Image (tube, rainbow over the protein chains, first blue to last red):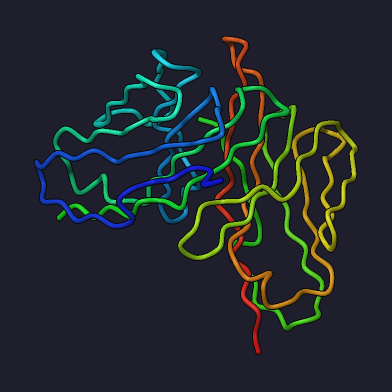
Length: 114
Length: 114
């Protein structure tokens, strides 16, 4: 059972480039989300999805797009990378968005924008 | 947005010592969660607390949900080398739209001095 799988593990982009961070889960979880982790800031929610075809914005959505065409996959797109998007990105999933449904995290993607 | 004040930011202890860390907020939470993050990996859930006053243990870890619902603490007894990592608290509350909202603390970095 792989859990939550994120690719790539590391990525370096130049300002203005675009890329997609991949996230897949094999636990049949309805809820999936993307967080960014910056020093001294904790984890901040970027976008989330409560099921296939449904997405919504989190705390820091600007500069990022998401889609959820299947239950398993939840890619995060950076359309025009900026240095402020240098961060570690975590994908997380849970059975649903309820209180008794803890998040399972992937191992992260470390992104550097120069 | 919401703020969770987690302290201490870092701890340097010797193997075998007990550890205590806490999270406080000006807001009330319905659930408190404690996660641990090992280097290069995503956070992993340690303990979930669902009721004010609840005291829950998981091996050498003990966590409590504060009576005021605005704080929580985590204790680790008889620390061992594999306890090294970053510990995050997270609070859940129901948003205006009836869904849960999860806020993370800024983390406590635990280092064991040989």
